[in-house]
Length: 353
Figure 1: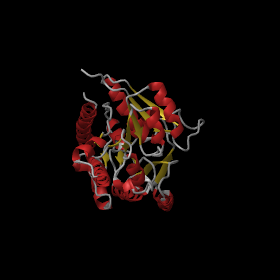
Figure 2: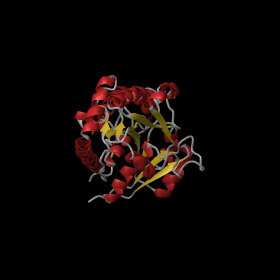
Figure 3: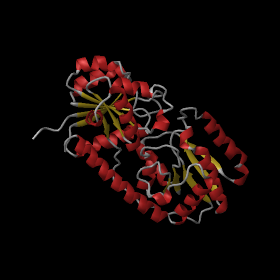
Figure 4: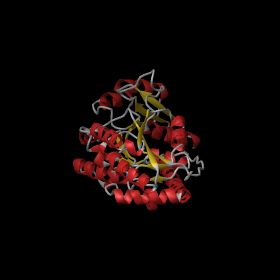
Protein backbone atom coordinates (compact mmCIF):
# COMPACT_ATOMS: atom_id res chain seq x y z
CA UNK A 1 0.00 0.00 0.00
CA UNK A 2 1.51 3.35 -1.02
CA UNK A 3 2.14 6.04 1.59
CA UNK A 4 0.08 9.18 1.80
CA UNK A 5 1.70 12.14 0.05
CA UNK A 6 3.12 14.93 2.18
CA UNK A 7 1.30 18.19 1.42
CA UNK A 8 2.30 21.82 1.86
CA UNK A 9 -0.16 24.70 1.37
CA UNK A 10 1.49 28.05 0.62
CA UNK A 11 -0.26 31.42 0.78
CA UNK A 12 1.05 34.91 0.13
CA UNK A 13 0.81 37.38 2.97
CA UNK A 14 -1.60 40.27 2.37
CA UNK A 15 -0.01 43.33 0.79
CA UNK A 16 -1.24 45.61 3.57
CA UNK A 17 0.17 43.44 6.37
CA UNK A 18 1.09 45.49 9.44
CA UNK A 19 2.38 43.69 12.52
CA UNK A 20 0.73 46.25 14.81
CA UNK A 21 -2.71 45.82 13.22
CA UNK A 22 -2.86 42.25 11.98
CA UNK A 23 -2.20 38.76 13.29
CA UNK A 24 0.89 36.83 12.28
CA UNK A 25 -0.78 35.43 9.18
CA UNK A 26 -1.70 38.84 7.85
CA UNK A 27 -5.35 39.73 7.44
CA UNK A 28 -7.77 37.01 8.45
CA UNK A 29 -8.96 36.53 4.89
CA UNK A 30 -11.34 34.04 3.33
CA UNK A 31 -8.41 32.65 1.35
CA UNK A 32 -6.45 31.85 4.51
CA UNK A 33 -9.48 30.34 6.23
CA UNK A 34 -10.26 28.27 3.14
CA UNK A 35 -6.76 26.80 3.05
CA UNK A 36 -6.65 26.26 6.81
CA UNK A 37 -9.95 24.38 6.83
CA UNK A 38 -8.70 21.99 4.13
CA UNK A 39 -5.28 21.57 5.76
CA UNK A 40 -6.87 20.76 9.13
CA UNK A 41 -9.23 18.27 7.46
CA UNK A 42 -6.31 16.52 5.75
CA UNK A 43 -4.41 16.30 9.04
CA UNK A 44 -7.51 14.85 10.71
CA UNK A 45 -7.53 12.18 7.99
CA UNK A 46 -3.96 11.12 8.72
CA UNK A 47 -2.05 13.21 6.18
CA UNK A 48 1.23 14.93 6.95
CA UNK A 49 0.02 18.36 5.85
CA UNK A 50 1.09 21.88 6.71
CA UNK A 51 0.20 25.48 5.83
CA UNK A 52 2.62 28.41 5.63
CA UNK A 53 2.23 32.09 4.76
CA UNK A 54 5.12 33.73 2.89
CA UNK A 55 6.00 37.25 1.83
CA UNK A 56 6.60 36.53 -1.88
CA UNK A 57 7.92 34.13 -4.55
CA UNK A 58 11.41 34.13 -3.07
CA UNK A 59 10.29 32.39 0.15
CA UNK A 60 8.89 29.30 -1.58
CA UNK A 61 12.19 27.44 -2.00
CA UNK A 62 13.06 27.89 1.68
CA UNK A 63 9.70 26.51 2.87
CA UNK A 64 9.75 23.56 0.46
CA UNK A 65 13.36 22.70 1.41
CA UNK A 66 12.43 22.80 5.09
CA UNK A 67 9.23 20.73 4.88
CA UNK A 68 10.14 18.39 1.96
CA UNK A 69 6.58 17.86 0.67
CA UNK A 70 5.49 15.66 -2.23
CA UNK A 71 2.76 18.11 -3.25
CA UNK A 72 2.77 21.90 -2.93
CA UNK A 73 -0.56 23.71 -3.25
CA UNK A 74 -0.15 27.39 -4.08
CA UNK A 75 -3.34 29.14 -2.97
CA UNK A 76 -4.50 31.68 -5.61
CA UNK A 77 -2.70 33.52 -8.38
CA UNK A 78 0.50 35.18 -7.14
CA UNK A 79 3.52 33.12 -8.22
CA UNK A 80 5.12 34.52 -11.38
CA UNK A 81 5.14 31.60 -13.89
CA UNK A 82 8.86 31.96 -14.66
CA UNK A 83 9.56 31.11 -11.01
CA UNK A 84 8.77 27.48 -11.80
CA UNK A 85 11.80 27.28 -14.09
CA UNK A 86 13.89 27.66 -10.94
CA UNK A 87 11.64 25.74 -8.54
CA UNK A 88 11.40 22.66 -10.76
CA UNK A 89 15.18 22.41 -10.98
CA UNK A 90 15.53 22.78 -7.22
CA UNK A 91 12.68 20.36 -6.44
CA UNK A 92 12.29 17.99 -9.43
CA UNK A 93 10.14 15.45 -7.54
CA UNK A 94 7.56 17.91 -6.24
CA UNK A 95 4.10 18.20 -7.81
CA UNK A 96 2.81 21.78 -7.84
CA UNK A 97 -0.86 22.79 -7.89
CA UNK A 98 -2.07 26.37 -8.41
CA UNK A 99 -5.45 26.41 -6.63
CA UNK A 100 -7.95 28.94 -7.97
CA UNK A 101 -10.73 30.39 -5.81
CA UNK A 102 -12.79 32.37 -8.33
CA UNK A 103 -15.28 32.08 -11.14
CA UNK A 104 -14.51 33.58 -14.56
CA UNK A 105 -16.38 36.89 -13.97
CA UNK A 106 -14.10 37.62 -11.02
CA UNK A 107 -10.95 36.33 -12.71
CA UNK A 108 -11.71 38.70 -15.60
CA UNK A 109 -10.73 41.54 -13.26
CA UNK A 110 -7.24 40.09 -12.72
CA UNK A 111 -5.43 41.23 -15.85
CA UNK A 112 -2.75 38.53 -15.93
CA UNK A 113 -4.93 35.48 -15.10
CA UNK A 114 -5.35 33.84 -18.53
CA UNK A 115 -1.73 34.52 -19.48
CA UNK A 116 -0.37 33.08 -16.24
CA UNK A 117 -2.62 30.00 -16.32
CA UNK A 118 -1.46 29.34 -19.87
CA UNK A 119 2.19 29.74 -18.85
CA UNK A 120 1.81 27.44 -15.81
CA UNK A 121 0.49 24.72 -18.10
CA UNK A 122 3.80 24.70 -20.01
CA UNK A 123 5.54 23.15 -16.99
CA UNK A 124 5.34 19.37 -16.67
CA UNK A 125 4.82 19.12 -12.89
CA UNK A 126 2.52 22.14 -12.50
CA UNK A 127 -1.24 21.59 -12.46
CA UNK A 128 -4.26 23.82 -11.93
CA UNK A 129 -6.86 23.11 -9.22
CA UNK A 130 -10.28 24.80 -9.30
CA UNK A 131 -12.77 25.03 -6.44
CA UNK A 132 -15.66 25.54 -8.86
CA UNK A 133 -17.06 23.06 -11.41
CA UNK A 134 -17.84 25.84 -13.91
CA UNK A 135 -14.37 27.34 -13.79
CA UNK A 136 -12.94 23.82 -14.01
CA UNK A 137 -14.79 23.23 -17.29
CA UNK A 138 -13.72 26.60 -18.71
CA UNK A 139 -10.02 26.23 -17.84
CA UNK A 140 -9.95 22.62 -19.04
CA UNK A 141 -11.36 23.78 -22.39
CA UNK A 142 -8.89 26.67 -22.63
CA UNK A 143 -5.81 24.54 -21.91
CA UNK A 144 -7.02 21.63 -24.03
CA UNK A 145 -7.28 24.02 -26.99
CA UNK A 146 -3.88 25.55 -26.20
CA UNK A 147 -1.98 22.24 -26.02
CA UNK A 148 -4.22 19.91 -28.06
CA UNK A 149 -4.27 17.71 -24.97
CA UNK A 150 -6.36 14.54 -24.84
CA UNK A 151 -9.29 14.49 -22.42
CA UNK A 152 -7.20 12.21 -20.17
CA UNK A 153 -4.28 14.67 -20.08
CA UNK A 154 -6.62 17.61 -19.51
CA UNK A 155 -8.36 15.94 -16.57
CA UNK A 156 -5.00 15.06 -14.99
CA UNK A 157 -3.60 18.58 -15.34
CA UNK A 158 -6.70 20.57 -14.35
CA UNK A 159 -8.45 19.12 -11.29
CA UNK A 160 -11.38 19.86 -9.00
CA UNK A 161 -10.55 20.52 -5.32
CA UNK A 162 -13.53 22.26 -3.65
CA UNK A 163 -13.77 24.15 -0.38
CA UNK A 164 -14.22 22.36 2.91
CA UNK A 165 -15.97 23.84 5.95
CA UNK A 166 -15.69 22.54 9.56
CA UNK A 167 -18.91 21.25 11.07
CA UNK A 168 -19.58 23.21 14.25
CA UNK A 169 -23.05 24.75 14.47
CA UNK A 170 -24.69 26.90 17.13
CA UNK A 171 -28.35 27.82 17.62
CA UNK A 172 -29.85 31.30 17.90
CA UNK A 173 -33.36 32.63 18.34
CA UNK A 174 -34.24 35.94 16.71
CA UNK A 175 -35.70 38.69 18.86
CA UNK A 176 -38.52 40.16 16.78
CA UNK A 177 -39.54 42.57 19.56
CA UNK A 178 -36.60 44.99 19.34
CA UNK A 179 -37.05 48.12 17.23
CA UNK A 180 -33.83 47.63 15.24
CA UNK A 181 -32.72 44.93 12.85
CA UNK A 182 -29.06 44.05 12.41
CA UNK A 183 -28.09 42.79 8.97
CA UNK A 184 -24.53 41.72 8.19
CA UNK A 185 -23.22 42.06 4.65
CA UNK A 186 -19.56 41.27 5.30
CA UNK A 187 -16.65 40.78 2.92
CA UNK A 188 -14.36 42.88 0.76
CA UNK A 189 -16.09 45.77 -1.01
CA UNK A 190 -15.94 45.17 -4.74
CA UNK A 191 -18.54 45.58 -7.52
CA UNK A 192 -19.43 41.88 -7.90
CA UNK A 193 -20.31 41.66 -4.19
CA UNK A 194 -23.40 43.79 -4.91
CA UNK A 195 -23.39 45.73 -1.63
CA UNK A 196 -25.49 48.68 -2.81
CA UNK A 197 -28.49 46.70 -4.12
CA UNK A 198 -28.46 44.64 -0.93
CA UNK A 199 -28.36 47.78 1.21
CA UNK A 200 -31.35 49.31 -0.60
CA UNK A 201 -33.29 46.04 -0.25
CA UNK A 202 -32.38 45.88 3.44
CA UNK A 203 -33.70 49.44 3.98
CA UNK A 204 -36.96 48.55 2.21
CA UNK A 205 -37.30 45.42 4.34
CA UNK A 206 -36.64 47.33 7.58
CA UNK A 207 -39.16 50.06 6.66
CA UNK A 208 -41.79 47.45 5.79
CA UNK A 209 -41.36 45.92 9.25
CA UNK A 210 -41.25 49.28 11.06
CA UNK A 211 -37.63 48.74 12.14
CA UNK A 212 -34.50 50.86 12.13
CA UNK A 213 -31.76 49.19 10.11
CA UNK A 214 -28.19 48.65 11.25
CA UNK A 215 -26.39 47.57 8.07
CA UNK A 216 -23.03 46.08 9.00
CA UNK A 217 -20.11 45.88 6.55
CA UNK A 218 -16.34 45.43 6.66
CA UNK A 219 -14.12 48.43 6.10
CA UNK A 220 -10.46 48.32 5.16
CA UNK A 221 -10.56 46.10 2.08
CA UNK A 222 -11.81 47.91 -1.02
CA UNK A 223 -10.82 45.97 -4.13
CA UNK A 224 -11.19 45.96 -7.90
CA UNK A 225 -12.53 49.53 -8.23
CA UNK A 226 -14.79 49.16 -5.21
CA UNK A 227 -14.32 52.74 -3.98
CA UNK A 228 -17.43 54.09 -5.78
CA UNK A 229 -19.45 51.31 -4.13
CA UNK A 230 -18.15 52.37 -0.73
CA UNK A 231 -18.92 56.02 -1.48
CA UNK A 232 -22.48 55.18 -2.54
CA UNK A 233 -23.09 53.15 0.62
CA UNK A 234 -21.98 56.07 2.76
CA UNK A 235 -24.10 58.48 0.72
CA UNK A 236 -27.19 56.28 0.96
CA UNK A 237 -27.07 56.04 4.74
CA UNK A 238 -26.15 59.68 5.25
CA UNK A 239 -29.26 60.67 3.31
CA UNK A 240 -31.43 58.21 5.27
CA UNK A 241 -29.94 58.89 8.70
CA UNK A 242 -33.03 60.90 9.73
CA UNK A 243 -35.03 57.65 9.40
CA UNK A 244 -32.74 56.02 11.98
CA UNK A 245 -30.96 53.70 9.52
CA UNK A 246 -27.22 53.29 10.04
CA UNK A 247 -24.22 51.98 8.13
CA UNK A 248 -21.86 50.34 10.63
CA UNK A 249 -18.26 49.65 9.62
CA UNK A 250 -16.23 46.87 11.23
CA UNK A 251 -12.49 46.37 10.96
CA UNK A 252 -11.16 42.96 9.93
CA UNK A 253 -10.60 40.79 12.98
CA UNK A 254 -9.31 37.24 13.69
CA UNK A 255 -11.76 34.48 12.92
CA UNK A 256 -13.03 33.83 16.46
CA UNK A 257 -13.93 37.51 16.88
CA UNK A 258 -15.59 37.53 13.47
CA UNK A 259 -17.78 34.57 14.39
CA UNK A 260 -18.84 36.44 17.55
CA UNK A 261 -19.77 39.41 15.34
CA UNK A 262 -21.78 37.19 12.99
CA UNK A 263 -23.65 35.76 15.98
CA UNK A 264 -24.87 39.29 16.85
CA UNK A 265 -26.64 39.68 13.49
CA UNK A 266 -30.33 38.98 12.85
CA UNK A 267 -29.80 38.11 9.17
CA UNK A 268 -26.77 37.60 6.95
CA UNK A 269 -26.74 38.79 3.34
CA UNK A 270 -24.45 37.52 0.57
CA UNK A 271 -26.50 38.29 -2.55
CA UNK A 272 -23.51 38.66 -4.84
CA UNK A 273 -23.04 38.22 -8.58
CA UNK A 274 -20.20 35.70 -8.43
CA UNK A 275 -19.18 33.13 -5.79
CA UNK A 276 -17.41 29.79 -5.63
CA UNK A 277 -18.21 28.90 -2.00
CA UNK A 278 -18.74 31.92 0.30
CA UNK A 279 -17.16 31.31 3.71
CA UNK A 280 -18.86 34.38 5.20
CA UNK A 281 -22.25 32.85 4.43
CA UNK A 282 -21.21 29.57 6.03
CA UNK A 283 -20.03 31.51 9.09
CA UNK A 284 -23.51 33.02 9.51
CA UNK A 285 -25.10 29.57 9.32
CA UNK A 286 -22.55 28.16 11.79
CA UNK A 287 -23.71 30.77 14.31
CA UNK A 288 -27.40 30.00 13.81
CA UNK A 289 -28.04 33.21 11.85
CA UNK A 290 -30.35 32.95 8.80
CA UNK A 291 -28.72 33.72 5.46
CA UNK A 292 -29.95 34.89 2.10
CA UNK A 293 -27.66 34.64 -0.91
CA UNK A 294 -27.82 33.66 -4.58
CA UNK A 295 -27.60 30.51 -6.64
CA UNK A 296 -23.91 31.37 -7.01
CA UNK A 297 -23.37 29.89 -3.54
CA UNK A 298 -23.21 26.15 -4.33
CA UNK A 299 -24.47 24.90 -0.96
CA UNK A 300 -27.21 27.48 -0.33
CA UNK A 301 -30.76 26.11 -0.18
CA UNK A 302 -32.72 27.35 -3.21
CA UNK A 303 -35.54 28.71 -1.03
CA UNK A 304 -33.20 31.47 0.13
CA UNK A 305 -31.40 32.24 -3.13
CA UNK A 306 -32.40 35.69 -4.42
CA UNK A 307 -31.93 37.30 -7.83
CA UNK A 308 -29.00 39.73 -7.24
CA UNK A 309 -30.39 42.14 -9.84
CA UNK A 310 -33.89 42.28 -8.35
CA UNK A 311 -34.32 44.12 -5.04
CA UNK A 312 -37.96 43.00 -4.93
CA UNK A 313 -36.84 39.38 -4.81
CA UNK A 314 -34.17 40.20 -2.22
CA UNK A 315 -36.81 41.86 0.00
CA UNK A 316 -39.05 38.77 -0.32
CA UNK A 317 -36.19 36.47 0.70
CA UNK A 318 -35.35 38.74 3.64
CA UNK A 319 -38.98 38.63 4.77
CA UNK A 320 -39.22 34.84 4.60
CA UNK A 321 -35.87 34.44 6.39
CA UNK A 322 -36.94 36.83 9.14
CA UNK A 323 -40.27 35.10 9.61
CA UNK A 324 -38.92 31.56 9.37
CA UNK A 325 -35.35 31.92 10.64
CA UNK A 326 -35.24 28.41 12.08
CA UNK A 327 -36.27 26.88 8.75
CA UNK A 328 -33.62 28.95 6.98
CA UNK A 329 -30.77 27.86 9.23
CA UNK A 330 -31.91 24.22 9.31
CA UNK A 331 -32.16 23.89 5.52
CA UNK A 332 -28.88 25.73 4.90
CA UNK A 333 -27.06 23.72 7.58
CA UNK A 334 -28.30 20.49 6.00
CA UNK A 335 -27.15 21.63 2.54
CA UNK A 336 -23.78 22.90 3.79
CA UNK A 337 -23.13 19.64 5.66
CA UNK A 338 -23.86 17.62 2.52
CA UNK A 339 -21.55 19.83 0.43
CA UNK A 340 -18.77 19.54 3.01
CA UNK A 341 -18.94 15.74 3.15
CA UNK A 342 -18.67 15.57 -0.65
CA UNK A 343 -15.73 18.00 -0.54
CA UNK A 344 -13.85 15.82 1.92
CA UNK A 345 -14.48 12.75 -0.22
CA UNK A 346 -13.20 14.61 -3.31
CA UNK A 347 -9.92 15.61 -1.62
CA UNK A 348 -9.31 12.14 -0.19
CA UNK A 349 -10.11 10.51 -3.53
CA UNK A 350 -7.72 12.83 -5.37
CA UNK A 351 -4.86 11.90 -3.03
CA UNK A 352 -5.66 8.21 -3.30
CA UNK A 353 -7.62 7.69 -0.10
